Image 1 (tube, helix red, strand yellow):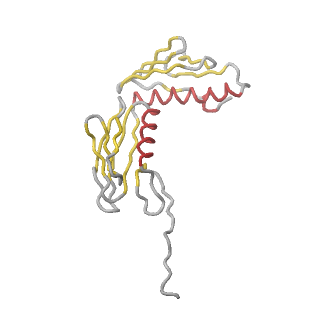
Image 2: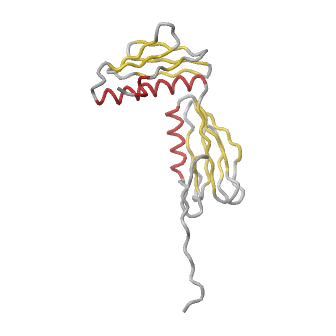
Image 3: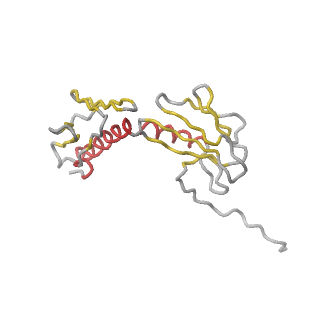
Length: 193
């Protein structure tokens, strides 16, 4: 049996959950999310109405075990998203690199001969703290926030994919908590002939 799947999901105040056939709809102060559950997994609300229970009818089946933990995690992310929300902080290192929001798009100048534009998905908000880098030490910083963890993570990964951090000078787009392994550059020989 899945250890994660067995844990009940606590429903915080202000969050409503609706179950209809295989569909789970969660609404809260920040918005609402909906998802279809897998038919092998049962979702129910316990009697007092304070917890969500995700049940696996056949715990010996390997695929059921995997789905049990996954469904529980997805529903827990929906509950957290509509009550608190999620955010992802990112930064850009590199001289002359910048980011700006323009007409529902994020426009990046990251060392290419052209700006790179990404359409911001519906439901995500962008907060740009520092629009452009200052030298190699002060990065451009921005924060993505939204209620859908999957959408937020995918958009952050798409942004990072534009210019991943390179290992020599560390230039590129990265997450704030990301550690970039640095390589030593070429050592020049000094006057030996």
